[in-house]
Length: 323
Ligand code: NAP
Ligand code: G4F
Image 1 (cartoon, helix red, strand yellow):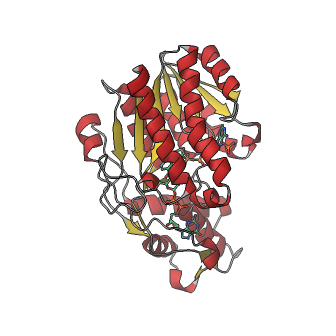
Image 2 (cartoon, protein in one colour):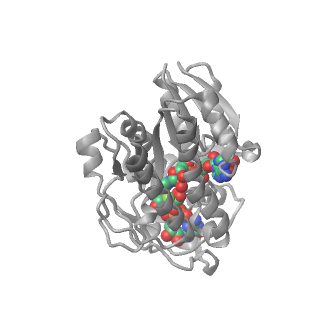
């Protein structure tokens, strides 16, 4: 039975990836923080006895390098999926130093823990389309990085740390450059979930308006459940490499609002209020990924359409509130 270690297992992607690996019969280990209590709800459905593999949680933190070495020695994983990060772009403007430490240096600490422990693990780095920032679309593996936030800057550092450990030590280390991906498990302060939760709260009579920032930004939004399959395929590939994972289709925040409110029979223009508080010091205007390398070399394609994703998220939030 292969052994996998997932950092950030309690996050959106971590929960979908753990589910995928368990269904493949993996022994799955996940790192959680003591403060991960709230997000652990995402993992509950994995203890229902229907999965083949096993899931074990360990306390750890990317700010604790010795602890990472100890975990690596104890678990001796075949595959490490590094998903943990301070992953919110706007928060990174408020906490640039912290974001650099966790999201940037944290990746270096984990790579170093693998190297010094001597475990021959394959390594996946959760790189981001946010690294492309101001580079015009469409973006692919050859597009120049031009990050527009402390988060993007930290992810560029982590991307190059991964390439560097591959080149310096012959480590099987790959970057998945994933464009935005969403789901009903998405954190509530990312724009898609904020909108779908807002629609449900308005229907339930708990909220009258939804305050948002820039409605004109465009994103290439896919479904997280499809994207974790791409991560797994990268570590089964015959060689380490870097891959863009995206749908190849972009939509504005405004279009997301139109569809989400429309799904509930509402007109977004009557509820959405543009609020300066949610504008960023520098914006990423237009992300549109070209996933042709992942399709060609990994056989990966997205299965969920944009409209289905929006409906899935609105319906899930309505079900929670009974609205
Ligand atoms: P997420 O829901 O925010 O999950 C991130 C996880 O990292 C959380 O479980 C969090 O733990 C953990 N974490 C944060 N700081 C940590 C620390 N110091 N030590 C240990 N764990 C820590 O993010 P996601 O959407 O699943 O994304 C997964 C990864 O992909 C992230 O690295 C993100 O930057 C990257 N990414 C995401 C997207 C996207 O659209 N979702 C696109 C490209 C790249 P707690 O539960 O304790 O807070
Ligand atoms: O949902 P967002 O916060 O996601 P963003 O900034 O694109 O970052 C996400 O995707 C990255 C991949 O490109 C990941 F690496 C990262 O970890 C994260 O998962 O914002 C999307 C867009 C932005 O242009 C933002 O300005 O929506 C705009 N927006 C408008 N109103 C808002 C809001 N964003 C948030 N979070 N909240 C608003 O009220």
